[in-house]
Length: 125
Image (tube, rainbow, N blue to C red):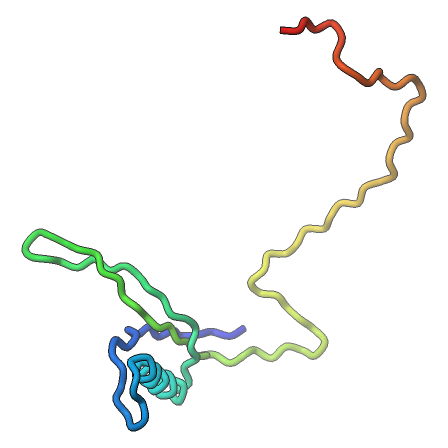
């Protein structure tokens, strides 16, 4: 089983200037690419980006909620354990109970079937 450690960092808020990179989108993508390549070189795998609320103090008694953009990374801290060839093991799933088998259906009892149609004996309202 693998164990991971996680790293959560704030997403960049500004782009990086570079030769040939002119638009805001290109600069922001460059900043994100540089950050992800730096962390990737350290063994971190990108997992996802999240936006989460954060309560901040304002003045002496006030507070406000802001939203923070975060990047989540992980890396393996314990290698996969060796499993004998030909065996598999699901670790995160509960064992599935065996489905009960049903026997043959019972034969219908001989006789007259009930009449089909509107109910009798009920007064119309």
